[in-house]
Each structure stands twice: as C-alpha cells, then as structure tokens.
Length: 127
Image 1 (tube, rainbow, N blue to C red):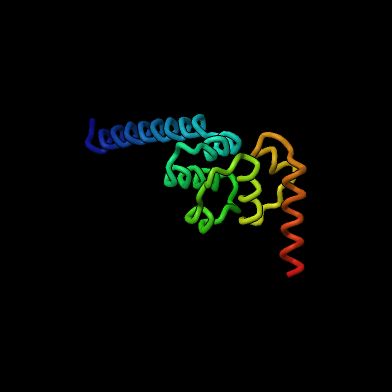
Image 2: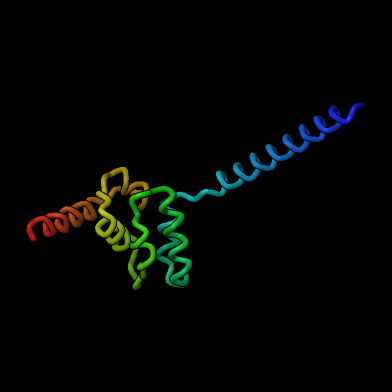
C-alpha cells in the first residue's frame, strides 16, 4: 500500500468518525430540546437563582427571537405567577400574544393576556 493510499484511508476514517460524532451531538440536543411551555414552568420556579432564570430566558430566545437581550439581562422574577410573567414578557418585548403565541408559551390560549396586552399598547399610543 502506498503512502498516498494510507493517508486517504486514514483521512476517510477520520471524516466518517467526525460525521458520526457531529450527528450524535446534534441528535442529542434535538432530543433534549425543551418546549417553551416547559421553559416557562421552569422560569416561574422561585427556588432558582436569578442567573438560572436568565439562562432559561436565553434558551427561550432560541425559540422566540423577539425576546430582547436587555430584558434577559434585567430580568427579575419577583414571585410572578405563570400568566403574570407571560404578560410581562409580551409587553416588555412587544410580542403580541396571539392564540398561537399563547399556546407556545403557556400551553393554552389566554384571552385575558391579549386584552391586557392591547390595553397596555393603547395606553402607550395615547401618551
């Protein structure tokens, strides 16, 4: 076997191994990915530190890009419940809580949140 053949075989083996490892990591991350609803439930946990809350918000930003970095950096839970927190996220990040968005974040539709968001938006327009 020539040196060129040996180098080619070794390069091929390294390439295949790299591809298998990369696909394995990608598959694991995809399998491990949490839904926004699950992340929201984790976010309202008062036992978590402020830094853990911010990490959860960063994960949420992967799903919903409209969550602002400034919001994440200044986030404090202050014992907010699930719906109250969702209202806060929507208003401060200018995310209209459509039926689809409500279901993504809360797991159900929230007419009350839509009404709250619209009243806040109208207050801002009239100022």
